[in-house]
Length: 79
Image (tube, rainbow, N blue to C red; front, top):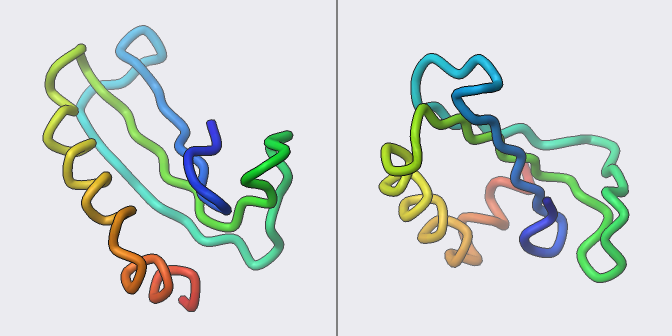
């Protein structure tokens, strides 16, 4: 799902074969359309995998903090 302009969050759950909580981020040289009228195209993709309904809460909290930091987003986009 596209969560902010140019940023998408992908997720996987235990029934998808997840063995442990994890997160990764990639930046795309060629932005991709996810079909979101307001926030496309996407150039930052974040993937989150979780083993249950609670273990990823801290990771999401940390991610929200990062995504609210405009300077951090600017640095990520430039890498």
